[in-house]
Image (tube, helix red, strand yellow):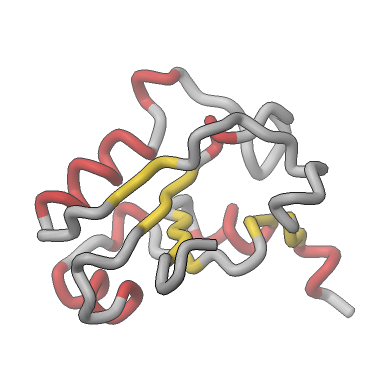
Length: 113
């Protein structure tokens, strides 16, 4: 809800298609390059970027199956974003259910109508 902030889902395109937080943009971690980041995130490197991965959800069901915390996607995503010059990077703070109405989860079935 921060003005100008971007919500980044760095999971695979397939998992993003199966379900994601409403308003999120997808750029799989494996596709991070200077050009792709600039294309998806825009030119403002100071804008707030909020990242999330499977471990931000309590459901432990596809497409957000819980992983070991040490292997969670947010860690390398954060490191790489900072390395590419994006300094205002944050992880979503709390663990929530995809059923929590505050996040507006969008699933593939919601998009097929």
